[in-house]
Length: 290
Image (cartoon, rainbow, N blue to C red; front, side, top):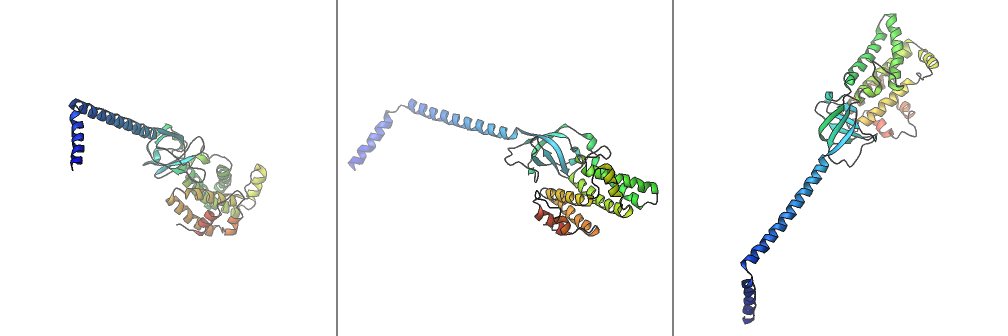
C-alpha cells in the first residue's frame, strides 16, 4: 500500500510541476494541428468533387428516343444520356455534357448509360428537326402509289423505289436527308414499309429490279435480304438500351415474318463469319420479348 501511495505522489508531483501556461500551449498546439488536418481534408475532398463534376463529354448526337439521346465522341464511343425533351436535340448536333467520371466506355454494340445535369448544344443542326417525319411520309406515300389507278403514279412509285433503296443502302438522299439524319426507330419503320414496297415491285413489275440493277450497277434484286439483315442488326442494338422500342420492333417483325414469308433458314443464310448475333436474331425471329 505504501508503495502505491509513493507512486501516486510521484504522479501528482509531476503534474504540480507543469505550469498552467504550458498546458494551454499544448492544448493550443493540438487544436492548431487538428484545424490544419480538417482544412487539408476538406480542400482535398472539394478538389476531387470538382474534378468529377468538371469532366466535359464532347460529341455528336447520333440517335435519340423519347427520353434519351445517344452521343458519339471523337473516338467513336457511344453514351446514352437521359433528357426530358428529345425534341430539343436534333440528330447531328454537337453537344457538351457535364458528366462524372466515366470508367466504362460504350461501343458499337451497346452505349454506356451515364447521367448529366447539363447538356449544351454547341452546334445545332436545326434542319434535321423534321427528318423522321418527312422520311416516313415520303416512303408511306410511295407505297400508296401502288394502289392508285393512275399510271403516272405507278411509274412514280417505281422511281421512288430506287430513291428509297439508295437512301437506305447506297448513301442516297431523300428530301435532302441521308440515313444518318434519322433515328433508329424511324429506320426500323422505313425498313418495314420498304419491305412491303419491294414485294409490290416484285408483283406489279416483274423483272424491273433486274433491269435497274443492270443499268445502274447497284444491286436491287437482293434487297429483301438486305432489308431483313439491316432490320435485325438495328433491333439487336436498340434492344440493349431502349426496351420499349425493342419490344415494338420485335412485334413488328412477327407481322413482317408472316406477310413476307420470312423463315429461319432465310435468316441463317444471312449469318456471316463476322456476325455473332445468332442468338439475338433468333429471339427477334421467335418474338421473345423478355
